[in-house]
Image (tube, helix red, strand yellow):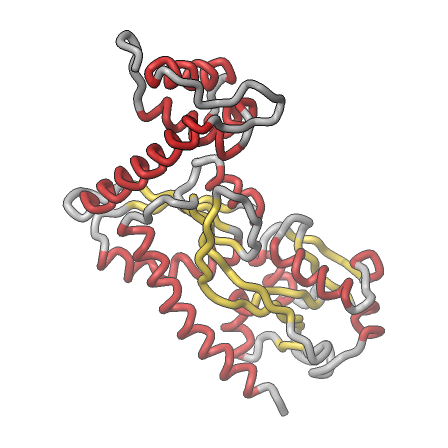
Length: 313
């Protein structure tokens, strides 16, 4: 090993992200560092180890055999450090936990479970940041959030997903606007309130409509909204009907302020997930949040199941 060189955790992080992204350029974007800095970090590691760890014999990014050995060492080291941090977390203030979330979880799932989390993890501070599903996951991938809670599973080698629950997207309408069941022709002519492009809700109901031979452009859209709250309020005001998460309108459906309209036998369903960096050990606050979410949602699904049964007349 080089006598006049050394390295630290920043060098290891640059190396692991470069390996993960298979590119110094993409690693520099992910870490917010210059490409020259990433290259220098790798050079310092190689100088310290006395061997090449990145193959430079071809244009394709690859590790040397020594690089593979060093990567295994780094993976083990990072896991051990994360476990140490998690173990020590119970003895110190948990600190700040940043959650990137799409609109439905941030409004109707996450706030409801915080009292239980605070009882089990006193002193923790959560920050909720709201994005569309893709952006929320990107925040985790770019290490700008500890976790993302979304309705879309966007696969990436650096991400791990924990399933939280299943959600149903329903067609909600003002009472008396439709009969309880309508056909395709009725759907095309009815005034509809849509979510904006990029939202997870719209992605799933648009996919459902496409499978049934209907394109968004064929619908009688009268309003497009950027949040589920504005969609719900528009429907409550009588603007039109809307496809919306059942979590967002459960109270209004129970109270009779809105009605759930049946389209076809197939329901529009999706799942909500918590996305984290693969291999990163969850600290106690984040693990507790996931546990509380699963418990609370199972109870809420029991309620929505009863509600659905009561509408089958």
